[in-house]
Length: 108
Length: 459
Image (cartoon, rainbow over all chains, first blue to last red; front, side):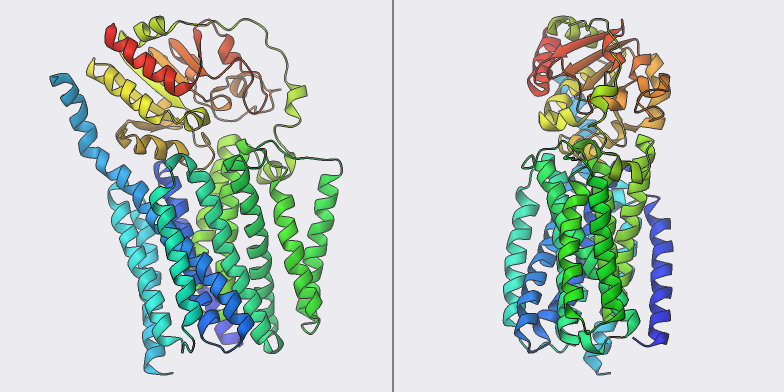
């Protein structure tokens, strides 16, 4: 890595850290579990590194390591986003149902 | 640079922007889901961009990995129950970290010889963090699932041994950094990091898992960010850093909510020392009959439910919602008070109650709800213990002194649902249970709550 690239990378890291702090400190405790599961799915972006390892070379060791890495990273991405969405769906739908139910109970 | 490479870089840039927007959406439940769609879109673009632009020569291994990973991922997303969310998340941290570690090992095998000092340093961090997070998260998942005992596993000289392991790990990292030709140093670092991950988590009790989960979340993210430095890939740096900082912020919040430092959580072995240290409070716990409890609830004006980990183990989230709705239909104001460290991961209780269709407008944070307890007729504590222990506020000698609590003891009347008469997980005596306005209801939380609901109907 040449110095110019390194410096650019450090800039990216520092700005992402700052931005992350700003954005994430606004997430309410209500959504902390989906937040953890979402950031975890997002960090499954190491999948793109795994894809390169598994497919862009002719080394067998790299293929096998890459294949395992692609598998685990994909589990992370697919499972992580899927389950985050399932959780958030529960937080969303109740807005209407929650209002309806007591009224429905009372009318019985 | 070829056209496809430019395309790939463009998808990475768009993905990075979408990831940030997704996390911004998480600031409100209304916008959170739309945010996640953006993140999914960003991830998809980045994957397609890589497959097109990264000069892939063999597709077989990629397809195998993507297929198996998707099948397992979809299975997890669809069928893991909400009560198992903590161990699912811990497992996910392990998978993410393992991917990062393996990419690091692959990079070392392919390009280890021609790496610059800086890249080698980043590679060391990536592999070390990745490896220790993998095994650490597996242990955490095992503890949360009950495969491994949740109690702190401790032995004499543990901290000394951990220090030695840590020194060997960092020592081999430095050696590998200085002398890249010594391959053994790299693999020693990898192996020792796997061991260190285990040693780091086994002495920590289940009750401290919210902090550990957040820390492992942070490590997994930082491992991905380090991968970005090794590969010179900005989207990896950005996504990894966002994850790393999110985990870090959560760890700090969790520690604050327990009034403890991260070092204390990691090396204190909370829960083991306490059994001997807690003083006997004495007094008697008064038991209340189901009918009397139902009567109290039915004729109350304001009721606050305080859920704890016991709610999750008993899977009682639906039962409490039914009781809550029943009381509401009788004109009772029902609220839920959520302590930040109730449960086994940040936000655990919120997710469970959301699953049971409790509107999030009824879920209150500690600071919001504490002033309301004095005007509350009945506070119902369901499987929570330390987070409602008044000793934390009143007794400066208590081991949890200074930990912010939900002040249920200020309510006019308290009903505590508990499995048995024993002490809670931490082994601390809870004076709340002996207060004159506290009544105990023993038994499984789920069946107790549904019986209560039946009894309320007959009032």
